[in-house]
Structures are given as structure tokens and as C-alpha cells.
Length: 171
Length: 442
Ligand code: HEM
Image (cartoon, rainbow over all chains, first blue to last red; front, side, top):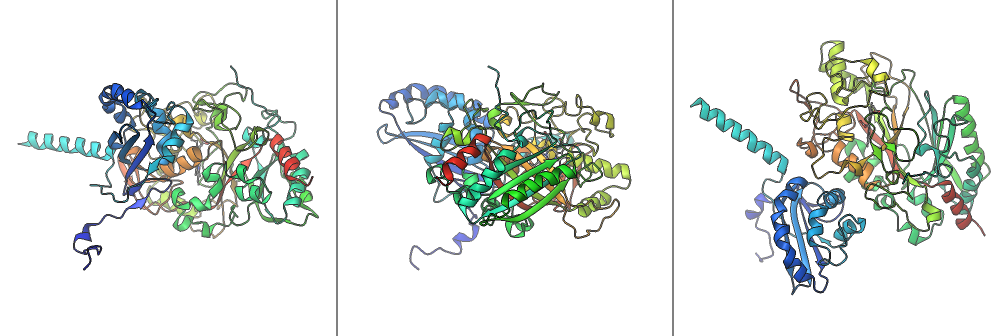
């Protein structure tokens, strides 16, 4: 067996993945992933470091508002020349892009203008297009519980708390 | 500053509500010869009805001309303009079948109305207040193609208000629509005010920019897109579902109302959840005056999964990722086919349904978003794969849930099935003239 062959035993738990139905990103069940790699404006690294603490501090607020993102990260790399934004989220990517950019616009505007080349402000319709143009699709992707959305998980947590309380009360 | 819509240049269907009763026809033309097709447009031009005086038209009939991307390509529109159109329009609706849920029974292989990929190059919309007026307008269309080789009429579909005055499932429709800034008059209670650029190119949209098209402004100004759907309705299956889920006729009416979010009279569940109130339905000051977020967050009155709360969640999604202002639709729906006689619950094999003509300046974030995210999916309301009980796909779920009294309906059939569809470009009158001048023989 060459080491390029797939072992049937280990592949038994494979998850069927597909590309997002409309645009970049992989998809397993309801879970999607996206990576966007942009160029950094010269001098943008300093601006980025000045602003990142506030951006991080507000992450919970804005992501809760968006409500469909499981995890999210921003990385400055290659000596301040490139920026990577990646996320794992529920549902389709492109159809929601304009909404996300509009709804979380003020948050992105705290960090990106002057850092990410081509990003003037979130409200500019060119921003959604820039993100779509610079997006990459993962070649390999794994998601636990791919059929549960953030909303589903929150609902199950409320249910399980209620059940526990009931059981506690019964004892 | 107040917006002024150039009503003399916008084609009538954008603002005119259909007459009541209405008599209409859709003609589909295929282009074999570009030069002759331009002659057709030239002949039609003086007859194209603009939106001017839309609220009190001198003649209760109109004729409008639309084009698929394939049609524009055949007409010889330059490549750089063709490439600048929105992706959805370029690809055409049939090519977007996976995304739109047009699979299985809805698959384009079952469509009997041509789309851009197989014959729909030019579409003519005719709407009138009487059969005579309709026939007069239709004659204009027929005379315009007469003697022109190279342009074939490949399909004709007549639409008209059924004698019941309702669509085929028995509901009054045509009640709720957005108010377009600059349309004149005042918005009705409950009517959202939308920026003109959501429905017509050349005006500011909800993102605060001027909605624009490809190529010179003379070509796209005052144009828009019509997302057309021909939807077959399985009325017998719908009636059987009501019968199987309720003992009495009142019970059946309740099931229907839960699925729609309005009683069949048009009275909103939001305003009268226990029983129908036809007086509310008739009163334009009341029949659309409701919202969900604070009045009914859990859907105790209007179920979150019902048709009207999906296609227009109003304020229910405020504070979430979705910005409702970006997903508004302006509907021009009309029924086709004979009524299934009252009481019949076995299919008679006759085609009947609805031609939905959705006007939107951005078919991707308007029609396609609503169809894919709200009609065909349930995640936005934490309901997994469940789809619209009236208009949704059925290959993933056949359930519909009502929170109060808590009930889960199962075994919903494919009550509506796609039988045709295309994104069409509806130029302004100036745009049509530009096409004749630039694309015609010099
Ligand atoms: C067989 C299929 C369908 C039937 C029988 C149907 C029927 C109705 C009825 C009776 C209403 C309520 C009355 C009114 O406000 O006019 C309505 C509302 C509406 N429908 Fe449909 N419809 C169908 C498919 C669709 C589809 C596919 C879409 C969009 C993609 C759509 C979009 C809308 C919108 C936007 C409203 C207004 C909701 C509001 O503002 O409250 N419908 N429909």
C-alpha cells in the first residue's frame, strides 16, 4: 500500500464535504469555512497593532450580533505584508456577505482601513467584492456536529439546563 | 432630498399594480437573426407603456419588454457590457438550480416555459383590465413580429384572475408590498419605505450608493431586473392536506391560515389569531399594519415558519446578521390555468398556478436570497431543513411547526413546483432606444 492510498478503516468516519453552493468556501452539513488573504498597505502593521486590542475586546459583542460565527481569527503575517481573516460559520457565505459587512461594519472599520489594501470602509459595496475576490477555499476541512447551528446549540443548552433543573428539583 | 423617479422612462410594470380583475399574457420570443430582432424592438418601442400616471393610467393596459442575458448576447451587446451584469443574470436561473432548490420535481428538465438557455431571449409582458384590451395589446406584439424572419414566438402563457377573485389555494393576494421612495402618495400603515435603488437602477439604494448597471448610463438608467417564476400549484394535494389535518371546515381554514400567516380572506393572523375577520382584510389602513419583534417574538400568533413571515420577516430579524432592508421584493404575481372546482380533492391533471414576477435591482441579494435562505431553508429561524409550507422545496423536510397551540404538521406535499424561471432585464425606455440606435444597422 503506497502512503497515498486511503485506508478504508480510517476513512469510515469521513464527512461528505462540498463547495459552498454559490461562491468560495467548503461546506460540511450546515458548517462553512472561509479564508481571505489580503495585502497590507505599507505602514499598516503599526496601525494594526495600535488597533487590535480594541478590536479583540469588541469581538464578543459583534460576533454575537452576527450570530452565525463559530470561530474567527485575524492574522498579520509575512513581515506585515499580508493579512489573513478566517472563519467557521453556519450556512452560505456569499449570500450573507453583504449583510455581515453591513451589520458588523463599524467593527471592521475599527481595524481594516489603512491596513488591508483596497478596504476603504465596510459600507462601500466594493468591500464585499474585495472579500469575495480574495477568498480561498480550504482543501481539507473537518467540523464536529456539522448539523448544529449556533442557534441550535444555544437552544439545546437552554433545554439541557431546564432538564437538569427539573431533575435536581425531583431529587 | 426628495427622490424623483423618472416615470416617463421606467417601464410601467415596475410601479403599476395589476388591474382588478386582470387579464394578461406572457410572450416568449427566440432570436435567430439579430437585425430583425432590433427591428422588433423598434416596432414595439412606441407601444411600450411607461410608469407615468401609474396610479391613474389613461388606459388600463400595458405592454413591457424584457430580455434574458442570452437574448442580449444574441442582440450583439458588446462583450464588456455583457460581462458587467450580475452573476445570477449572466448564468440564468436554470443554471442556478442547486442554489435555488430547483431539484427533483422542480428541476429545469420539467420546466415547460423556456428559459434563457433554451429559447427565452425576449419576453413580452402584457397586462390589462379587460380581455378586449389584452387582445388589443397582444395584437401589437403579434403585428410587430409579423413578417420578420428570424424572430419566433415560442411560448405564450395567459394569466388572469380566477373567478373566485383569489389565487388557486384560495387566498386573497397582492396585499403587502414595499413603498418605493418617490413613487408618490403616502405609505400605508405597516408598509416599509424602501430606497428607489432597490427596485430601479439609477437611484440610491439601501447601501447608500447609486444602483448601477454595466456600460453607459444611457443603457441602464431606469432599468431593473424581473425574476420570473412559473409555479405549478397542486391544489388537490393542498386540499387533501387541509382535510387530513382538521375535522371541520373552520379547522381547515385555521390550518391554511397558519401556513400562510393570513386567513384566506387576507386578514393577518397577527391581528386576529383566533378567527377570520374579513373587515380587517378589506381595510388597507389595517390589513398590513403589524410587526413581529415585540408583538409576537415567539410566533404565537403568526408562526415563524409560515409563508409571509419567511418572505418578509419584517422586524423579526432585527439585531441579527440579517439586514431586512437588503432583501425586499416587489411582487407582480398573476394566476394561470382554470380553477379546480370547489370540493375536488383529486388531481385533474390540468396545469394551474402562479406566474411570479419579482422586481428587484439586485437579484442576488433580493429574489435569490429570499428563495434560498428563507423559503427553502429553516436555519434563520432555528428550524433546520424545514421550508416554506406553501412555496418551499420538499426534498429535505415535509414538516411545519406551529408554536401555539404547539403542533408539528408532517407529510406536507410539494404543493408548489417550479415550471419555469429566468432573470430578465427590463430596460428603461431610453435604454431600449439606446439598444435600437447602437445595436441596429447603421
Ligand atoms: C405557490 C406559491 C405562492 C403562493 C400561493 C403565494 C401566495 C401569497 C399570499 C396569499 C400572500 C399574502 C398576501 C399578500 O401580502 O399579498 C403572499 C405574500 C408574499 N409572497 Fe407569496 N406566494 C407564493 C410564492 C412566493 C414566492 C416563491 C415568493 C418569493 C420568492 C413570494 C413572495 C411573497 C412576498 C414578498 C409576500 C409579501 C409578504 C409580506 O410583505 O408580508 N411568494 N404570497
